[in-house]
Image (cartoon, rainbow over all chains, first blue to last red):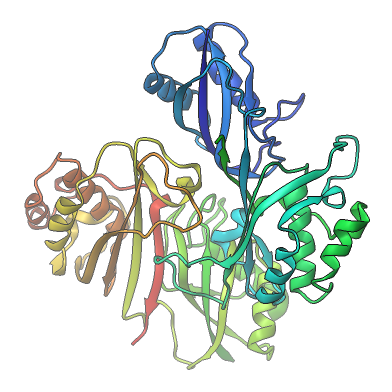
Length: 257
Length: 257
């Protein structure tokens, strides 16, 4: 048996997220099915982050144990030949036998993209949350700064059965800035893209999207920046803002060191 | 009657192009249907460029004559409320009564995007032509320079019934350069985007895509750069390269002065 580390990118639109589930197409199931003809039997692939339905990935990491001796370049080509174009394996590496993409992850970087301007540009549709009302970047940044550090993020965890008991996480960096516009697209409608990038040691289910939903309330003047600290302290989902839509969220990178 | 100038952006994926046609959804038909409830009768919208099926627009221009006195801001909102999110009106302006988006256009800018690198990134799928084999940028540029100026582009016109008799056009600028990568996406697979931007006084059907198909043959070493001049001189479609896929093409801008 050998252990391999796969790095993947995907457009999550139209998929039911990473994790295998009955009756819905998921990225994990696609990768497992792409490996099966090669290995000749069912293969389990473990992802670093269980991205939700509609969430995209630029650098998801997965681990898999195989008996087949295929070299890594040929495996990359074989996998991509068996996957839909919206899901691509970017890199295949030999890993230590004990490597597990989820348990060994030391940190993850997520990015959320907000599109401003009165008209939603068609090319941003799939990859940003459009906010037609103005957003105050300074207020967003002030509120975001209150979330950096080690906190109990219980208020920012998805309600329901999948809740985790230990809800303390560390956000080592939360950076909010205007994206540099692409040099090939004419400016239109005064819209800009605000990028919210978070690095943390781990994220609860829906945590990034609940943070973004809360920050947007601040940015639109519907919540005081300081109330974000109250939301943390309350440890109740209802004290934070709504969950931002999946389409603006990207798993950018998984760190192992 | 008043005459209005509309500026539109659209994601052409899944549409049969600009021009109204039976049995297929087109951008022109969508805009006309979006105006009809307002005007109370059928309205004809004239587009500057009849983009083909799957081609995108960042700044298509259309003219329309209306009797309804609705102000331009309200019309923009009403149109966007009646259009699918992939088609957006970016701007509505009052125009001279004689304004016609197609007949008055003095020039157009088109951009074609080539994605290089062995693996096609999922986020570039809809908006670029992926070339897994290496492309020589210098060779592309050398060949592109031969197409600038006033030429008979008969070899670069779609074969078939829609052919135009006068096939002389002027390309006032053909610029080929690497795109600056987005600051929010980690580099992956060594891939880069090559942008090919053309400004001309007019373009024949499939002309930009036939030019790109020919330049790519040069960039991949399957054709000499100098043979592009021979292709022009031959005035036969077969002497140029294949038609590049629609998904990499954008109508960037229409100039009226």
